Image 1 (tube, rainbow, N blue to C red):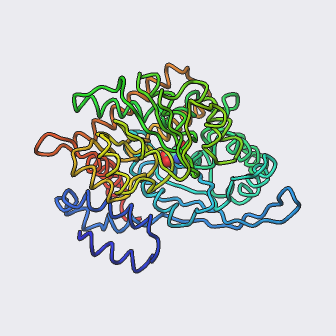
Image 2 (spheres, protein in one colour; image 1 turned 45 degrees about the horizontal axis):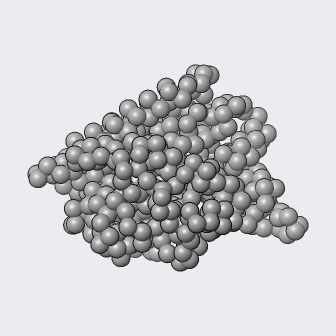
Image 3 (cartoon, rainbow, N blue to C red; image 1 turned 180 degrees about the vertical axis):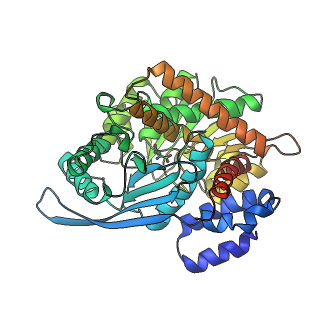
Length: 447
Ligand code: 2IT
């Protein structure tokens, strides 16, 4: 395999699909050496097949807003790879959603899901619908219109969507209600992230953030460090930032920054339970403003417009919002201010220049597909509970989540340990996920 040749061909075929090309480049660069030691991969063109989604559904979504105006959006579901199980991955509702964004997410999801140890293929979907400023009624009508098309593509043994940016418990509720009405199927396993009384797994809302902090603990432990008392910058204030803030605080760390599209809130004494609870109110309001935290807690949270969480001096940076949210300049500012660990909780949260800068400067860095895999892993646990018509206790789910995050860390160490004994988590996660999917594809023949 020649990474540059493959990328040049993809670039010519998909010009402008920058997020997708960025995600493919990162994986191919990591796996090239191992790949070339396996002539059977090359013979069956595993990489050429793996970078193309199995199929892409694209559909019009038309709905009526509160003023009676007709609105039209585009919906997508990308079924990326089914080598190790049915398609699994979230739905993103965000104004900037494009096929490129969802292809990058579906590609990443394939390797992430392989790392979880559970039998799930990779998928992603969503719409360019912008939840900002929308009423509850508008959200419901949009979800119903979206499901009007999506229901034909999904099923508990085919493709199981969940939430992502802009899609949480409320949206999953509206989507599931409409799925039942259209499909006349009452198997709750068709979606994950459901409510607790109708098939949802306990701890699924917290799982991405909790799993990320368990992974951070393993990273620190492996490097002979400890999380207690450390200062942490989180970005965003959505579901992932919320779960990460709860667990970081429980583990004795101090979350001193959260952020939004409008700026950053600096919380010198560390985030409190009341503030963490208020993040849910801010999310439900659809205002998309972190300034609301400073308004609600004057004196305790200080808002600065136009700044990111990466401007606050911390030990550990946890991007929890959106792809490419941390640039090389941000990485330089963090390191200059003493930051020595960055774990991506958002998918592809760091730009390639930032990752390079962290690695060159001895910062412990781990990529999203390892760090945030606790979310989809707990979705996998929700599917198991649904399929066996039972619900596990919080202790059972949490202990399984712990085991899974530990196993992901072990895979990173196995495939990413360098001659000097440090771990390249990017390499480790990419090779670990890739080997599993590639092996399954080989065994299933040329399809
Ligand atoms: O990026 C992700 O892993 C998710 N949005 C969760 C997907 C899932 O199926 O739970």
